[in-house]
Image (cartoon, rainbow, N blue to C red):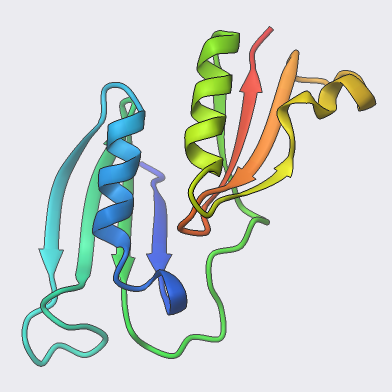
Length: 142
């Protein structure tokens, strides 16, 4: 059995899946885009400019992505986030800055741990949403 995170870009994110994969694979080491399948002309849910199914690797972990232009009543939610265990202060600071910048949003600042103490699983944590609406929790491992 294999479990893989699958991101679906709809609404405001529709049309940004390829850009998001490029962004993610550029900031994480050991990353690449493995495959992209575009919609064919006349396919329900998309146009030839949109990704019907894509696979990409972030630091050795595989993810899938799709986008469609259906009018869904849902979108990506911060209730589910990608959790990153960082090995150094420099790594957590750099990744947090890149993920939360250019239209992203900070939900828990990196320095907030000083106000609330140990979260129980690391020395430093931050939570942000990137410019595509994907939620990330970054943790400095002990």
